[in-house]
Image (cartoon, rainbow, N blue to C red):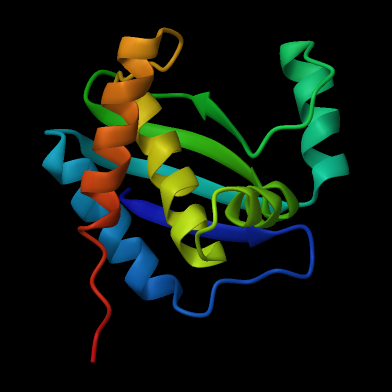
Length: 141
């Protein structure tokens, strides 16, 4: 089953889910992986903080938590994104909310494709890959 699902635990919703679905599929294919199922769950800071505490034992706020359920080259995951964090980070980095959201969404997929961001070198490659994937997003005219 190949699918991407969007769930909303706050008042946020993507206006163009189908465009995001096609883009994510393209991102996965570009890394020679196959889509099984991805659930994007959009939520607020408190919701994600609880998940961070409960499952990762981290008492911090974060913009994304990616649960890797991949089997071989098949991408399968639940990806939780705090739209509050994304909005704050967009302001901090002086980019639009949508650009930061795409960066975070791509970031989760890149982790599932094996990219890390613990060292400076890994983080540099991750940032370059995020930019490459953001540029793959096409807006239909």
